[in-house]
Length: 505
Image 1 (cartoon, rainbow, N blue to C red):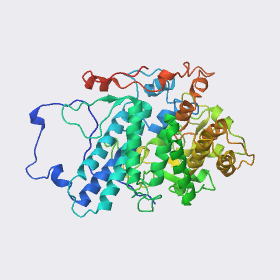
Image 2 (tube, helix red, strand yellow):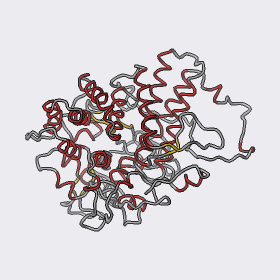
Image 3 (tube, rainbow, N blue to C red):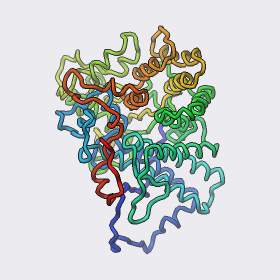
Image 4 (cartoon, helix red, strand yellow):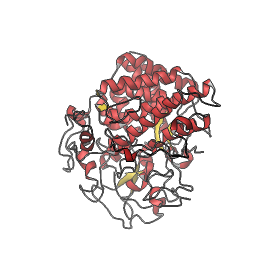
């Protein structure tokens, strides 16, 4: 069951670092309460909490851009091409994939959506400083814990993609300019939020049918491990390992026996799922003039073959972006259940579809446009698929635990046990020792198209030797350390009135 948290239209704010000072733009309603009066009851603060979840849904299509944040990292890795009609179709993506993005041609909505999320979390934290009618002390703790974890989650987007960003943990006043901090400083702020949220001890380890989509302790633990491992902060590896073991030992999560089912509607919020971003097609009203309306996702349309015959092979048509590479299909052994669940092989199709740029005959099955995937939508079918985005799965908990055991000098046997649980679920009987290389490669096989690979290559030190020119001439540049962060969008540099320093891209 999906627990969809819809925007109620409050605090729809995309961050701008400057603001217009014209007095005629400031209007006081003679009939409506202002925010200081409105957010004084439990029900109204709950509305602000709901609104803080909303930007999670936006990056697939918002602010005039298609930029699903998971795929924006994947196209810079080695599993997917960019595709489209040619290298000028979504040109910013193609430039990023070749490590030649510019401040004028780089993804922008992740910046805006991330800061919108931070701002909305700040709203919640500011609201609960007042007397809240009907709210208990535990209610206020729960509101705070959610807001702090979500703020760290949004900051994680900004941290990974842009690194050195302006950041605020209290909402800005005119002229809406704040200090740019380093990536290391932002890392400490995220850790501080997660530590504070967990210290409140109000988050459940796992949600229920009525709360799926809310922050949980397990989700916070996974976010903590992700950022600590990406930072390579060995002082916090023991804590991250402790958190992974708590999830494992809780008994509330397990590997789904059928890997392919995880990504079907029937697999949503299965026992393997630690966190998903909810989308729904039933009565979904997202439309061309209303990209931020709650409902479905455009991701399946983006990544499915163009002019595919409706219903053929159980799929609908799409726009042909992010086709899977032949090398990705070939890295799987024939007996690996993950191969066909990941790679939709259309090479044997005897009909016709519009084969677009970089298409080698494979598409990402995990999020492909299923024939019934937008059933019940009431606006634009291509925008309203019901595929939840899988953000954290229990298989990642096991692989995190295996890696952290090796990094902290723990039991190699225990680490191998975690690693091989993941392999056995995939149908692979051959066991492997738990080395860092083996764990990183298992993550490669397990998480294609889930936004993990690029960051794994960077943190493991493999990016410079793996992300190199390809045999087709699509990628002509190699990844280097100064490509770790994307250029800050020039529009933000211009708005900042000289207070932002551009990344050395």
